[in-house]
Image 1: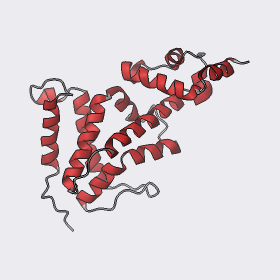
Image 2 (image 1 turned 180 degrees about the horizontal axis):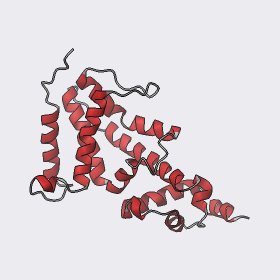
Image 3 (image 1 turned 30 degrees about the vertical axis):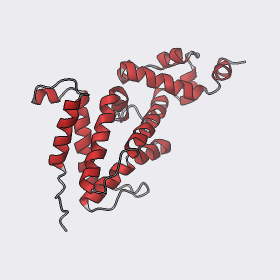
Length: 211
């Protein structure tokens, strides 16, 4: 029996074990601390197992990113809908920022175009589905058609909506609000209040899309 066969026999689902191992490493040490050797050691398998099953670092990190996007989507889709476009858009943006604050290492990973295969079909599907409710809220607010996975075109309103939340997310996980004012822990209620105020100013209820 080869080492890879022994690994698979021992774990039952070796690929999932390696994905979870990589996720745990990135959660604890950030993507900068990740190596295939560490993932193999964490999962308790041979050093060559990650490369064998994922064709190298990019393959494994792409699998982790798919898993992260699915979790992000589950959290955003669980957020309540108010029926008011501005409120729903703010709720989705705050959910996005909150996810980043709670998972800084994993959030940084899904932003790293140099480490992930962004053309992987499963990744494209997972990342699109994760932001479907966010995209629907942005489209409703700006009076536009929601994005279509099969008609991937630049949509200024969606770029604007994502840039706002994405920028705020990075501000929070990098401690940038401290440059603007004295603030406690970025994950605190104070920061959530600050973000809510920013989003309210960015997307007021009285906004009307001009023809």
